[in-house]
Amino acid sequence: MHRRSTLKLLAAGLPLTFAAKSFGADATGPFFGSGVKVGEVTSDSAIIWTRISAVDQCDDKFALPGAEAEVRVRYRIADKPDSERTTDWQTTKGTSDFAVQFALTDLKPGLRYRYVIEAKYDQGENQVDGTFETAPTPETETPIRFVVTSCHKYQTMDAPGLGQKIYLPMAELKPQFFVHTGDVVYYDGDTAPLATNVELARLHWHRMDNLPYHRQFYPNIASYFMKDDHDVLKDDAWPGQKYGDLTFEQGLEIFDEQNPIGDSSYRTIRWGKDLQVWIVEGRDFRSPNPKADGPDKSIWGEEQWNWLQETVAASDAAFKILISPTPIVGPDRPQGKNDNHSNANWKSEGDRARKFLVEHDMISICGDRHWQYHSVDPDTGLNEFCSGPSTNKHAGGWRQDNFLPEHRFLRVAGGFLSVDVTRTKDQPEMILRHRDVAGDVVYEKRFT
Image (cartoon, rainbow, N blue to C red; front, top):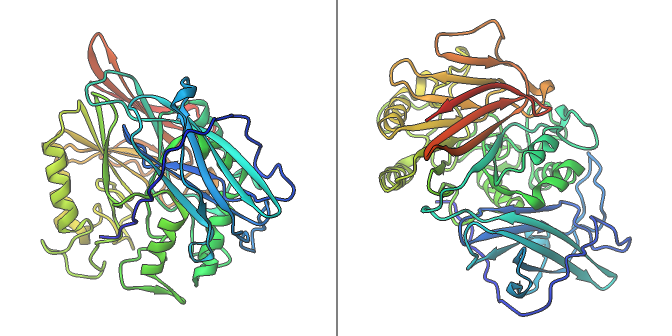
């Protein structure tokens, strides 16, 4: 399994002052040019990620140069100044593209935390603050809201120089957490410069993470990042392939380097009494697409399948959601697609996945497809919701008039998905809403 070792911290009793400077406010740096991300939040842990840069603004054709600096995080429960803790200083290094991650442990469940991330070098110092919520315990009855998006192509951003517009309405909804289902960047296709080596692959992350809307959103929302083909290597990639000089294995390392990722690329997180989500891995373990279909052909791999069965069986959450980078129900385009569980050449494992999810009263949320939909599998009754692409300009691959029997909703346009889990008269209820790029609801489905 592809893993990243977590980083240890040392608690200290230094006073916290949450009067942090804005990004790049100190003209001498160091700069947080790639922003700050809070990831892998559970009821008692979180990972804070940042990358230190020598300048604050990124050109779309040149990587954001990194800088060696000392970095640490000070954090506390938002309304308890006496709960302050401080990590050790870490030194950013070129071998990891000047990115660092801090594993915060022994957090308290269901609380809001505030933090300051500080950086210093000989020329100056700088800091940024942020906030996030930890997950409630499995016994806690509380409303939960999260949002899901997919497919961020730099060339199709709808607020040039600022980023994707959806980050503003997503933030306004005040979700407890956010899931990016993959294709956070596009290494291949028409996304110049093509990421045919490590340096060019890192450039794609630098210019996406440098966008102002993204830098405003990520420090303040607990996020879970998933990878797919375009942000690992190339379209429909599998292990062992290359794209120019970039190898699949290097693509995996760069994804973990540029995002807060814990020990495993597949994981499950409990958010209170009524919600548990499973975030599955679709690239690390997959068989080659051209392999003949059969019981030994797999996207998820035996180890992940065993984990999924064990963790789902152990859950007593009212609502169980599996989040996949690619479709399980679809329907997908009939021609030329052979990369996901809804395609004919993955029917064996696709049938197994759909049957398993329905037997355990689960629904599927996915990304990857460039249109929004709610579909119901005609054979099993599995419900699947696709978030759609992040912008209208990136939508396509399906015709609006091609409404099939599986579809309950179809919209060939950009936007995102929001999910609310609440209780009405002591009965749990879940509402999934497809939203357009402005955040307006275009479709709603309720489950009780």
